Image (cartoon, rainbow, N blue to C red):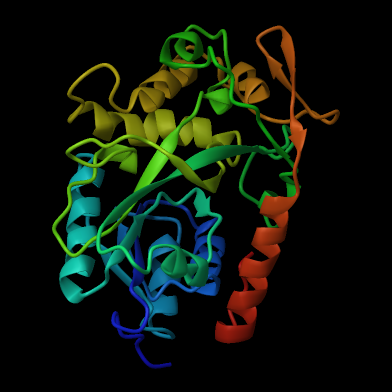
Length: 304
């Protein structure tokens, strides 16, 4: 399979990833299927087979690249900006940075047509938070196919109410992610929520987001992510979610928080004494099926 020239298709993506073997095949299948010319992965010290999968896929298609870094500090912003600007320097004009649990609901053909006349453009996607079934506690084969609801963003769900155990994290209010069309160097803020200098947000796309794929993600965020993030935290708002999850783990409240952020059999969140209804939504499941079939047909790889 020959490399796609940036001149032919100028949309590329970048992702910093760590220990995501359960979801990374679907991420690759999705973004390759919708037409990304290049996806640059930076593996931040995976130990669960994530790097090995990405390396194997990179040998089958030049549209995937992966490099491994090992560091005891959380350097996502620096790694992401390095990958994004390297791709821009190579000639890719439209850059979409994403996290490993985010599926932008776009097609490259539609994206390039929409912005064909513009040399520079900043655009945003808004999270739609999909909710795992309460019964699926650990990564397992076909585990992500149990997801069949999304949560409604609540106006009062923010850092204060989440950390006070009054609102579920999965109902955070209006979280956005940024992408850009440019030929100039950019600086993406931590988490890809903004560019520097900041610009006004406008909803233009949806992002299918799975913030908690399993109960075990709470423990991973609290015990694995938080120690590295604490070393570089500049203020109380930065990466506050992992600090919250560390408190949840160390105070033995994992089951309580998991129930508040996962779907019970009847389609509700059991959120700290309140039942919050969820919205039936099979779009993510259909996306996962298409991503799986794309990998199997084009690369003879099985996603699960």
